[in-house]
Length: 339
Image (cartoon, rainbow, N blue to C red; front, side, top):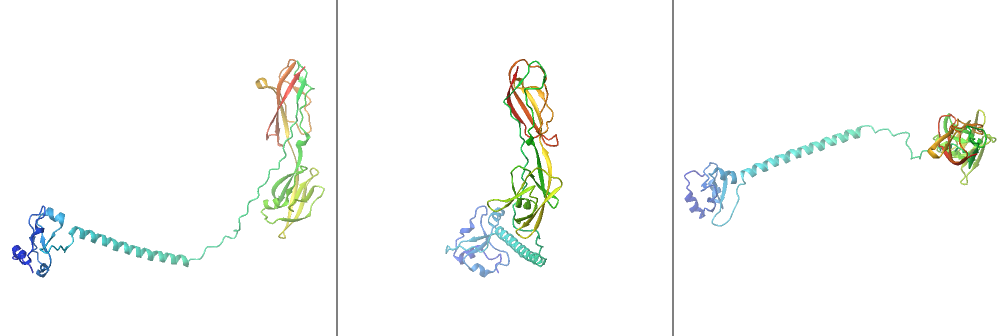
């Protein structure tokens, strides 16, 4: 073992080395390692180890310094103390993370095994291929408005009994057959409209996807059953309304027997009429509701008019059969001749 009596000069002489590493900034001269535990035979190698005395040098270079021998061979015999601690800390972190990954994988495997052991979820019993939903069609009848080119009325009076024509056409009275299956109303069919509807359309509205194959029973005085060019069965309502209910029995392609029920109901449009002068949009006359097929007999103006021609217009406002629901109004321009 090396002791303190082993001199610096003897070491250099025996090794034939130059103390090149002894001159280090901020550390002055390096002294040989005197700490116990360093075997002498270790110093017989290519380099000598020296302790740095300066505190600043030890913080910068670590506690040990390597002396270059005369053979110009450099050997690092010990890593710096700070680097060693950093590497040790990183190694410890890697070990810890490796253990966590192993534990986590083991935990995940246990959870997967538990899930596999659980019973499978039940299948949805109502599932099936996508079916585009059938939507009802608004088959309401359009209102019919009267038409005029002009009125000729007497002058200097407010009570007019001739020269004008305010009436509600009788076409604004009609019947609708309400079609239903199993007490569920599906759609209205306007009677005597000349419009035919595919019977399979009603079936699909009721959730029956099979096509109509045959109509086995129906009242031929109230309905016409026909086929399109593609062979689809159609239904048309005719001959006005009827009391009570009528049934149409349909056989589907998959063998089902379906009964369509039709209930007839009278519908109409009422119309009110307003006469205006174009100049200033002055109201001359406003009527009440007029039923289909009827005429206004007397018109009471808001004021007397002098003889002449006036630009005027009539506002026709239709109402549904409940007498309060307005529909699209019509405006008819006329020439009002006062004589």
